[in-house]
Image (cartoon, rainbow, N blue to C red; front, top):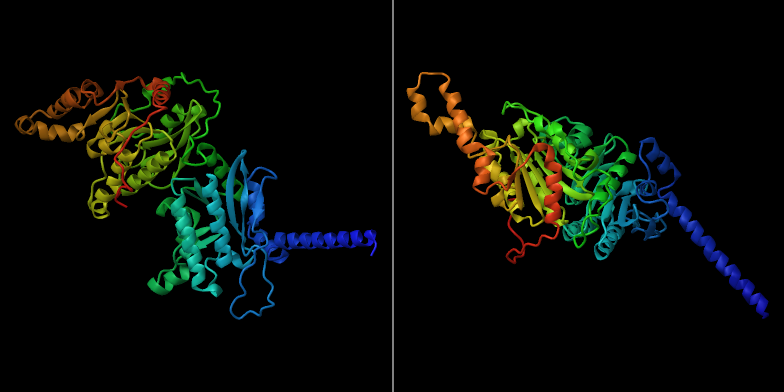
Amino acid sequence: MSPDGGAHRLAGAEKSVLDRLEEMNRAAELGGGQEKIDEQHRKGKKTARERIAMLVDEGSFVEIDRFAVGHVHIGEPETAKRRYGDGVVTGYGTVDGRTVYLFAHDFTVQGGSLGVVFGRKVAKVMDLALKSGAPIVGLSDSGGARIQEGVQSLAAYSEIFFRNTLASGVIPQISLILGPCAGGAVYSPAMTDVVIMKEGTSYMFITGPDVVKAALGQEVSFEELGGARANAELSGVAHLTAATEEECFELTRKLLSFLPSNNAELPPRVESSDDPDRTDETLDSIVPTDPNKPYDMRQIVRSLLDDGDFFELHAAWARNILVGFGRLAGATVGIVANQPAYLAGALDSNSSSKAARFVRWCDAFHIPIVTLVDVPGYMPGTDEEHGGIIRHGSKLLFAYCEATVPKVTVIVRKAYGGAYCAMGSKYSRADLNFAWPSAEIAVMGPEGATKIVYRKELEKSRDPSTLARLVAEYREKLANPFVAAERGIIDAVIRPQETRRELIRALSALAKKSEQRPGKKHGNIQL
């Protein structure tokens, strides 16, 4: 045999292998086939790979387990055609130059249903994210567990849930719900840090409309039961919603920009052109002189943050409290603020849970917490008492007391009773506590307190102006911030217009804060 003939055969074999690889790549790209892709587009949805390409930096995505195939199912011949990828695309890429790991359900392959191989792929990419200390982003669009694979598909879900738990507080976990997500499938996104839902095409629920009708006789649509609006406004499952998939990815990229890649790193810092010494004179008059008149706390939040940029979470749920991210002098901060424009800013069960989880999230990822207080107390009434306001309200106290990141609190107006304690107070271990001159710090509102403290005098008086006089006296003697400052409960009374500057100085001084706590496995927060 001539040397040339051997080389020719080797070249031919190599070409054959490359041809096969090209053929396999084309098949993988098509997923469930062109018909299924066209159907996905007709529904206003992108394919798994299109979605990933829209999220990550151009050309940065590296797919893994591209050619994995699922099991042959019951009732199918051994020769049945199996699709590469088994209904999920996994891999890693970069977002603004930082590594992220991803998995995206491929609805064109068996409705994106989860089988054994599908589950192994997701578990593998989550393990890689944990070992690499990088965020994991999941794009959900799935029909749920693959019935043909029986209990093994449920076992695969449990493997994912376990990894969600391991990753919690270690790496950021973000879930985008871009299509159906029902039954056991909802629990993995629910265990992640943030859920973003696409309006109109996505839904999340445990049992669908048919089951609800059969069990309870209730007629309800998919959208009413578990659409983006229902989960953003009523259940609180969704933190953010968007009208388009493109907007979902924009929100994800912006959210990642505030977060460190893992809990061993500090949040990224950006260059800011917003003067750290900037003042805002409008803040001197933003709080109404009438203590019962509402105003929008968002105006204050935006005035304080760099370029007025407030990335609010859960905006439509538990609207009596605001939570979200922003920056001060280029550094990420978490904002927690009562909202007097809704329910007077009083704390109820939902707002307590909302704020508590956000405080714990910030604490897990070294994000300082700025708290703006205007709270008249906990919400009264049988509905709240029977709904567990004591249990839920304690979560917020627990979260603030547990958190060891820098914590700076500003009392803007009311800070009454137990709600004062819960909102990052001095003795819940906030590091620095400031107050505006308009602040009122007391066990209860001045009018109610006056009726108790001066009960006998009020009973004797026939002058209708007596109550007003005594309320003013109570405010002067007990409820104003200067009294609290004299007793060391407030570290400084500051001019509202200078709040941004004081916050930046305080956080700069606390940047290297270190605080030791008793060693333990974990606390037993009232879940």
